[in-house]
Length: 192
Image (cartoon, rainbow, N blue to C red):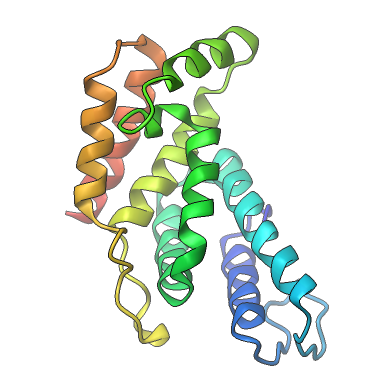
């Protein structure tokens, strides 16, 4: 899911969803070479979830930082996946908060030390831009109607307000605070 082609990315998410549901996969996208594969192995499940987590973070860092439209579509499908498999959401949130500690300040103020350390070693603002966009879009998105599920109870604007409050109530780090806050508001405005 690291291609810059939005249809390819959505096709790969649909393939992963079929693996999670244990349904037959038949050529999910033009770039996929699956003929027919039946998922019956727990190892495949575990590997598929790890692929979803890491590729979503990578996709956010490389593509969502520069493209809001695909972020909204991707987040909608991701919202549906987490509505179907609610126990998997917490690990994803953990990865989001590790990749962009500013988003987790509402529950872990020690993230400030991590933010300062990350800034001293690398330029990560564009990565955080994409991660903040994905996180915000995920909290506000509704699953696509074809999945037939409602939004997960944790994926809602009240968690977003807690995140905003956590950022505002901590020490202001000019670049980090501004970049993450702008992305949160930018995606929020796209929904309302």
